[in-house]
Amino acid sequence: MRKPKVMVLGTFHMKYTPDLCRLNVADLVTEERQEEVRQVVDRLVRFQPTKLAFEVVKEENDHLNHEYHNYLNGNVELKIDEVHQIGFRLAERLDHSNVYAVDWMESVGNRGISEVYEWAMEEQPELYEYINKTYCSQSHKSLQNKTIMELLQELNSTEEVSKNHEMYMNVARIGKDEQYVGIDWVRWWYQRNLIIFSNLASITHEPSDRTLLIIGSAHVHLVSQFLEESGLFEIERVGDYLV
Image 1 (tube, helix red, strand yellow):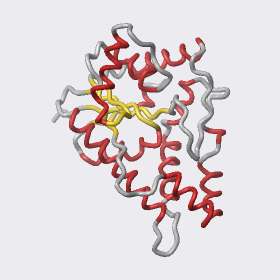
Image 2: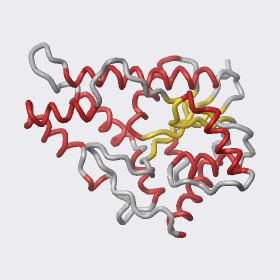
Image 3: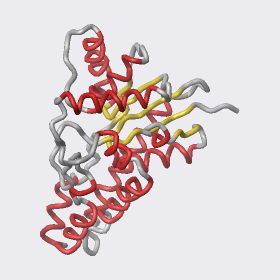
């Protein structure tokens, strides 16, 4: 039986958000960088997605589409974030009438990741330093001396996707005795990605559907795992298109 297709593009966050692993984002408004974004869109068009899903909380779906239609009508300029720069441009090229918000960010009584790191700095400084040095090196996440295409190729490589997930398995080690500090956040991380999977499944049900999810690269391992293990979809590899 023919299955709907899903492809996941892991991105860096073009709009700077401070966290432990900070990406060195160059000035993306220069014409050179804008041309690089357009080249990425040219490659993704070849997948011919029929639906585009973004890392935007589902409750903001109407607002997201309002922004998209304002862009189509020439009423707003593109913001510097991956939803606008890649997603809206791609949706316009493919003449999509709407786009989809599939993220979830509610608290379930868990610690935030910054709280987990702060706890580790005080109580498990060696583990904190290990995570910081092993997984948060600037060298492999910088746009310096790279094009946007090259960075996206790197972020979506099997090695990098696995390393991202490996980091969170080490975050789960943060804690002492019955204080499961890291797991308190990791359980939320799994729930978030399961909800993203569920939201994707709800919009990708016809055999002709070809859904492209544009999301932070840290999500790629789990979302792809859930998609594959559901047995419901045919998974396309984004690396085959970023060449």
